[in-house]
Length: 448
Image (tube, rainbow, N blue to C red):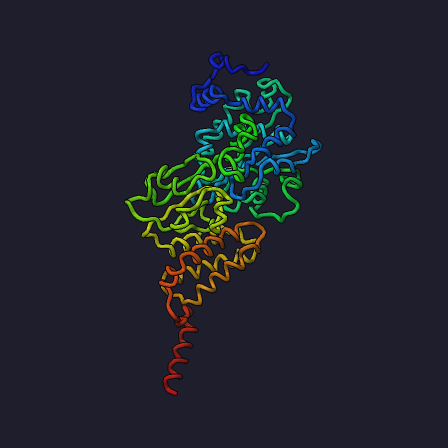
């Protein structure tokens, strides 16, 4: 027999835990109504509603979600999997952990709808290793969902349907590269987190060689509202080509950092000065990274004009990414910021592709020279050249993620880099043998 919402008070919540209460509150506010509605639709109808909504991936790539779901084979002859990407290792991004902690059951409901639409019986929620707290919180919520019959075989009794699925939480080991969908699948399978060549795409050959769909946590969490409202109504929210709401994680030199849910297309100026209280200490704005550390920056003038949706940001040479807004005030050392970002991507490169493995190291070394005042103007041109040779020449997008901020900062804040370099420099080798050889050469030149 299905669960009746009017009988919430009759449910015996055995454990008086935080997540028992959270589930009860979620149900009282319409939780799992969208899944019940989806069960009355055919799987193709559910996918079409998501297509009509215009929902695009919230993990950075902005790929249309309904279209991705439609790639999943209709046949149930082989196992099919859903991977929910909660790796969230992009510096400046901290939205998914808010869902794990404060709204886990909407994520679970989104998984149920996605699983039903694609005929999937097994889901993995992949969470980065550093998120130990949120792994435990999400596991507790999942345990309660299993106990109450909202996940697993008990779903058949709870919802009066033959469909059910299992959800597992997979803990990563803290590698940035595992946020890339194919590296994530390798990690789940127990292999090194190396990205795979595409094609074949995950929907053709994913986990253990079977069809797989990978969606970001925020993307899946948006699905229940789409089914509840209808795709056409959801598409009216925010920017026409990038509809819906986004979770903007605002950090840096801002008075009220935090996570803000706002419609796409919201002016960045409004987010910074109305919602977040302006730049700290009444300082002037210098730069903003709009979507996590891998996105090219905006100057203060561009930030005044930009709207926070993909198409609007492309006009300024950047992207929405994960919606992680990093604010930098007038005193920020742009060279140091660029050097720090390059260090991160050099450290996190998996090393599979030569342009990324070698190029990220070169960029870090050159930026270190620039930061320490031991570089020349030619080094700036060389730095841009190296970044350009990494971009677009790797299996996954980590190479692009490393190159974009370097090229962006170097282009838009060129004067700050030029102020740190000198016309020429003399190479003094650290190797003592070569050093003595150079000294002997100079002595000989002086004598002649």
